[in-house]
Image (cartoon, rainbow, N blue to C red; front, side, top):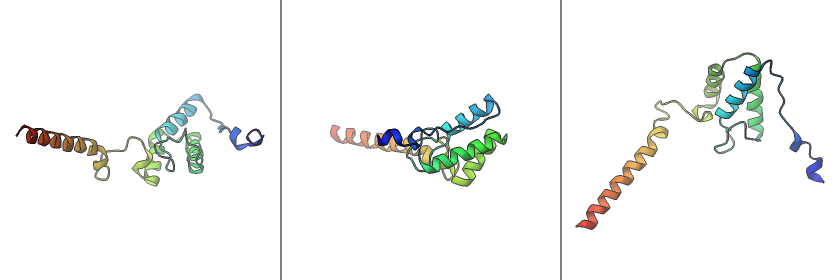
Length: 120
């Protein structure tokens, strides 16, 4: 009974976009932007309060005819590179981009060292 009476479970976000291009831009941006509260979940999939606020903000930008680059630049400037799933390569994200290769290289060196040690 409680589930059926809960109005928040049936809430659907409805935005009055002027055309299909705006709707597609909104959907694209909410797929590309990361929820800052949830781990590895985009805005489109998140139900967190902050994600709802960010979705409303993205919808406002889209309805005010802002382009994708402007909206992404605003979000990165306000929330940092973490808000995007594809952060740019710079000094702050260097370790993020190259840490998998560093770990792989360290693992290969340890493996080679252990193989040589066992041969002796």
